[in-house]
Each structure stands twice: as C-alpha cells, then as structure tokens.
Image 1 (tube, rainbow, N blue to C red):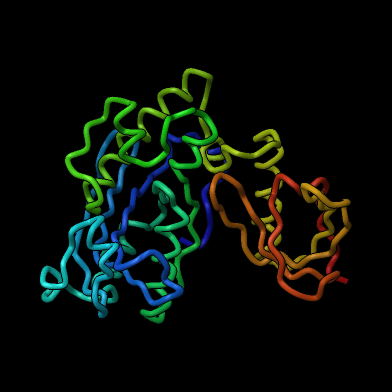
Image 2: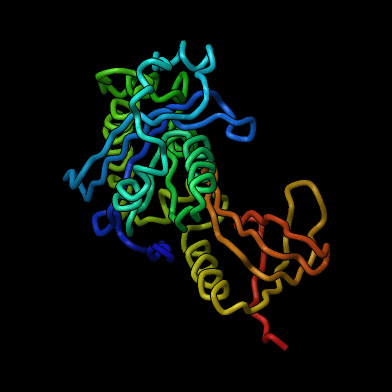
Length: 276
C-alpha cells in the first residue's frame, strides 16, 4: 500500500474501495470524530467485500450532525472505537484506489482517526465523484442525493454510511460508462478531471515524482501560479496527493525554505537534478 498504481492503468485492471463516513460534526480540527464508516471493495462491476460499523466517537454528538444522519449517542454506547476496527478497514484499502463523494471530507476524517490511533494513513490514490461531477456535468446540485436523483439512481437511504457508499458506486458506474463512450479510461482520467493539462503530460509528471520521492532526488521546476509571475524553484518532493480533481505535490522549497504545495497542472517544466 506504499505506492500508487500507474496512472495509465485501465480502470478494469484496478481494485476500488468506496468509502463513506458519518461524523459527530464537520471538522476534525475542532475535535469531531467518525461515528459510522462503510467500505465497499469492487473490481469492475463485481463486489469483492464490504464492511460497515457504527463507531464510538468518544464524544457527544453535535445537534447539527444528529439532524443529518440520525445517529444518537444511545446508538453508539456499545460501538467499537475506531482503533479496534482499523485492521478490518486497512484490509479493504490494501492495494486499492479509494473513491468517495466529496473525498476531502472523508479522507480528512480518516487521516485524523489514523493519527489518533497512532498510525500513519496509507498512501492512496483517491478519486472524488464530486470532482468528476463538477468537471464533466452540469447537475442542478452536486450533492450525492441530487446527482443520484438526476441519474435515476434510487438511494436506499441518505446520510447513512453504507447506503451512501452503494449510491456512490452506482453513480460512479454511470460516470465511467459515459467516459468510455469517448475511449479507453485510465486511472489518470478519473484522478485529475479538473486538470488543464493533457492526461499524458500529467502521467509523465506523476511518474517522475513517484520515482524521485523515495530516492530523495531534488527537482527543479518552473511554476506558473494562476495570477502571479512564473518562478523557478528547486524542491525536495515529499508527497503526491489528490484533492478536488487536482493533483498536488508537497515539497520542501529551497527558495522559501519551507514546505509548500504545488498544483501539478501549474508546473510548466520539471527536471530531476543530481543530488550534488
């Protein structure tokens, strides 16, 4: 689980794990925790495994969250803490691409729970069906329920973890079917739907970054922000990650002498330097 699959891998050759969490509030930075989680592991159109559980959040439910998902404190009294079910969750994430609707929310809470458990969140490729919806469609509203309704997908329930996971899977299948009408669909097509650069260029860049990170080789890049002049930077790449339809590199920037985040489609040139 330490490396991403190649961005050029066709979707049919990949395993995907769909995930949804329900929480005690909106922000893990203010102490909110996961109170329910569901995962569905699939390959192609075939389900491989699933897991769902209430989770004891070790704090009271916020009224706003209760109004959304209806999970009460009383329902969580006998639920396991997150750390107790982490091995089962880890097993479903093994060698998989994670898929979620508004993935930033779910992944943020998962990272927080891994940290509380004293563990490091796995290095996963993450696909966001919200980003796909925004990049490729014009739905009247981009909530999971609204998208499902417009596509004719009938959720069994809303704002419960497994029901939302199953709905996300059905929405994903519709999205992928539409994309396949345009040709072969690789991982890169669904990872970076908002990118302004050709998929082939992003694939080459991500491949170079993934090779540079474990070796510690420095990179020289020409970076072009949206509303500022281009700058040339020498950076030490630390991580490639995904958020809201874009790829990013977290790196130590020698120009600024601190860690910075660089959006991949704004990197105009990238050169691997000799370490000396």
